[in-house]
Length: 139
Image 1: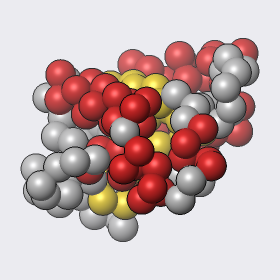
Image 2: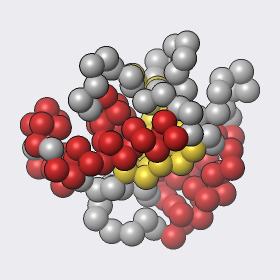
Image 3: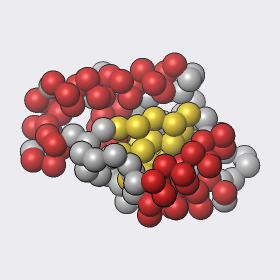
Image 4: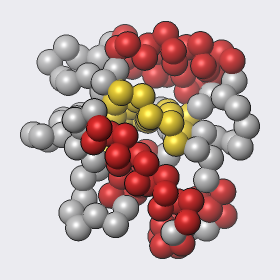
C-alpha cells in the first residue's frame, strides 16, 4: 500500500495500516509502486480534498494499478455535500473507497502515544486494514 496524498496526513494513515504489524506494509508515495503493493490516494473529507482526488484520479497513469481512495475526516462532522458529490463521482474509478473517522487521539497526542493508546485508534486501524484486505489489497 502506498499513500499518494493531497496533504491529508498520509503518514498517519500509513501508521494506521502498519499498526501492530511485524513488517511495515504502507509507505509514503515516492513516484514508484513497489512490487506487490497497490497505490492509495489519501485525502481529507473536504471539498478541496475531493477536488484533489478527482484531479489525481483523472490523470492517473494507466500503467499503474487503480488506487484505493482513503478519505480522512478532518472534523467530527458530516462530510460537506460538495465533497460527497465529488467523491461519489469518482468512486467507480478507484479500486476501493475507505473512510477513516475523525480521531481526536491523533490530534491531542503525538502519533506514537496515540497509536499505543489502543481503543478507537486500534479499532480504526483494524477496520482500515480489513477493508483493504477484503478487496484483495495488501495493507
